[in-house]
Amino acid sequence: MWAVVGAVWVSDSSVHCEKTVMNVVFGTVVASWIIIIFTIIGVIIVFDPLGGKKTVYLTDGVNRNLESSQSGQLLYNVKNTATRVWEKRIRLLCCCIVQDDDHRVAFTSIAELFRAYFSDTDLVPSDIAAGLTLLHQEQDKMESCRKEPEEVLCHSPTSPGTDDLDIELENAAHYMRFAAAAYGWPYYIYTNPFTALCKLNGDCCGNRPTDSDITGSDRHNFHFGSILKITGLQYRDFIHICFHNKIYEIPFFVALDHKKEAIVVAVRGTLSFEDILTDLSADCEDLTLEDVLENGFVHKGITQAANYIYRKLINDGILNQAFTIAPEYKLVIVGHSLGGGTASILAVMLRNSFPTLKCYAFSPPGGLLSKSLADYTKHFIVSVIVGKDLVARLSMPNMEDLKRRIVRIVANCNRPKYQILLRGCWYEVFGGDPDNFPTELDGRNQDDLTQPLLAEESLMVHRSPSYTALEDESRLNSPPQYPQLYLPGKIIHIVEESSSRRLCSSDIKYTASWSKETVFSSILISPKMITDHMPDVVLKALNSLAQEHGACISCQTRDFNTNT
Image (tube, rainbow, N blue to C red):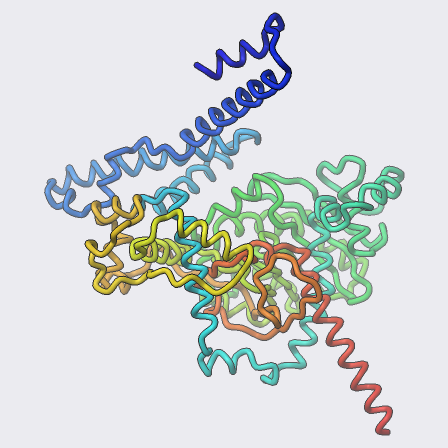
């Protein structure tokens, strides 16, 4: 009411006060309305309409005290209510996009996923922030300890297959340009903020290519012009370009790469709300293919996106057209992030028809293929991961593990939350030694928690499964709620030679090595967990390694000639 009165008073032209007073009151009214709006939005998104019904999830005793039929019906009703709540939240967040049947199915699927994931927790955002801060510092303490002999051997630069690794790095650096180009003008402007618009205006507003088949919206040819700039190809080198984008249908292009004598299919990564919904449709489904014995589980949303591109390539005759023009070329499929996952599954689908096919997946999602399919793809897929990339470690089992770790470390910390957050902000920005906050209390005696975090008190009272699992180790050995899915193909892991947590630093040197999928079975907390996923960072790391390899070859050649 004060905000309304203030707004009326400020808008009244008959009020005559000093200019300073008017400015102060005006600023106060604006700030009040901003706070009110954000409060309303926060209540809509965060408020849990389930209220006390949530204890049905959190306690096993309720079910035991009711008859089985009553218990089952009550649990079913609460689950349905929770799913509807999450579905409304998702619809609200996606209100700006046109919604059809595919969207409604995706909303329900994603709502089920979120309902199951958050059903046994009672954490507020500040609790999660405190938990992530503590986990990051605990992780840095562990990294400073001596590594196990096996891990040192795994990362040794003199391991077998070094020549093969150098070849794959050179190829990956080349094809990453195609994967980055699939993002179109947003990526080109992001990497060339001062000159991109001038170059695109000069080159793209004139002629629209007629030789290549372009579908979808590309106003002023900005997307196509950016692809030309990034890849360095000519108009005539493009067979098909699709900018059409909706849920389970993502943009891609097909082009002739004369340098590597390859027909390249480049799939775009996440760049829209529709792409995010495709990412979040993380249910598992069977992938059934003829003559492939290694059938198994795959990511549902990404598989549907791969099916869409597969139908376009085969049914519309796009690949036939490409091989008619260049019959001696090989097929290479590339993509970054969502595009990398889609490219991997698309490669599995096309493998029987094109035995020499090769796929390069840059920073693909971690929860993509079952173990049998992941092993099958090692013959023709190479995944490239940089540093502590979050997306490459994203899977439902890893998210469950992260939730348990957050609950554990928050429950066993006896410092007030504001101290953890302030010290954590200082540590993230300015570095230093990891804090020595006590995070493990022997016996987990609740009396020793002089200032327990507020939300965790609720967890202790309700005895949620996530918290009870900390005391009952047998629960950790129980069958997993979600099937374990892995990264595709052989994995190249690129890390900074000198570990630095700063977000921006110059002259970064990288090292690369073959890695196992088990290395990515846990989410690592770091300020670079997001930036390591960005396509420009991946391209920079690959170019640095390729240039370093080229310089080494030049040095070796010069030394050989001198000796001769």
